[in-house]
Length: 284
Length: 287
Image 1 (cartoon, rainbow over the protein chains, first blue to last red):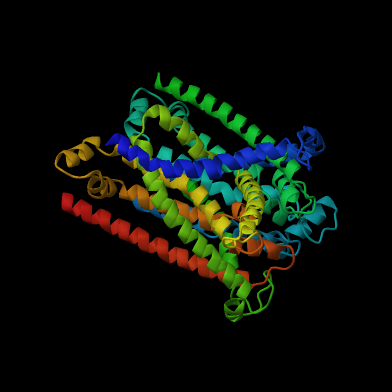
Image 2 (cartoon, rainbow over the protein chains, first blue to last red; image 1 turned 90 degrees about the vertical axis):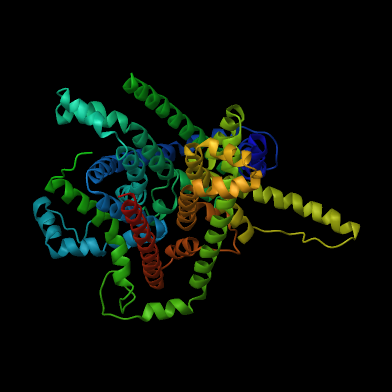
């Protein structure tokens, strides 16, 4: 029976070969070829000029991931302490925004952060802008919020926060309560219970949360274009330009994609290695 | 976990939910605005809902989005379930490398998946062009010489990134299943088809349902992969909105956001109420 059932995978294996493996091979081929089809390494040599974009992308994505973790971990932790009814509703509420396309949500932030947008109007009404002008002796009509790096980070945090909460929550909620009780009985205070028991045991959730936030953040292009106004070019924008934008150069685009993919894979591998070590330490 | 949340903890939760929902509620409020502005309230009207129904561009893209998400979800759920059963029956040595490949679309950045599929489709269409020209010269029957990216490629892309999510949620259910059940069924005279329908399927049904839900969510939420694989002939709602943000976004977008939000809210409410009721039934039956 086992062998017969395993034949069920054959169609999907063929599908994967065609639409998962072959496309990646295409990216590799393109990355190493010139516009006329010959072998070249010049695509990678050109990338030095974009070093600033690489650093900016990784910097913003790291900040966004850190903020997501700082918000998402406590949320998951607090949620897991509530009753089952509350947990169910809270989960639905966290999932719900994901069902509206993320462009709709990002678009809404545009009108909130605009120079004469809702937030600036609110600041005007409560006199925050006047206060700021008085204190710092400036003459601002509004706070510049849109088209800044801060706005891009905000967009990333807003869109990807659920990706941080869901995996952490699903790990914390399954934690064995007797472990925590045992730690208490053995004299650990609540700080120690958290640091020595809950935190290490929830680490797998944290790691997958970090991955799920960092990868889309570092490669986004719609958020940076809508909230960064196109001034804060990110890796995603750079790749998009090479394929569908003005600077048509799919070979360079493929090379950038390849390098980004490799960096991300290496980061994830190192992180998971580190995570596995931690887990084993806890087991022992 | 012990149940004691301080007031401050609850306040923090509330603030996070305000952060998550404020932009959505603003969209909803301004969908009823009489003016064009997304900032200044000029009175209540249903003007934008009327205009939305007459906006062919938006309605067409909503239709494309729903169609591609539904089709991709159905196909990916069926294919993913069979694939997961196959993986489950495999020897570990064969399974592990295949599962690694299966994880690639989930781990990869969306833009890399989109770009790589785009390159593949373009290369295939070029090859197809020369093949069709050669084939047509044989004079049997005519093949179209120029294929372009469109709904078909969009659907392939969506299926490709949806299947791993289905496998991810069906796989654990298979592992939890008592393997002796299948053997017992077959000892008692089931063919393996019957064993599949009568034993395996009921056991893994929750996994299939949650896999399908995840797949649908991913399809609806996707922008980047669609953007690179839909070409110029098909456009999802996200692509239409993205196109608009370069110029001026028309307020019909607020109206469609509201309609989407309400639909999803109702669907989720129904699902959850049903689940809660089933759970209560189970509990009363147990006691």
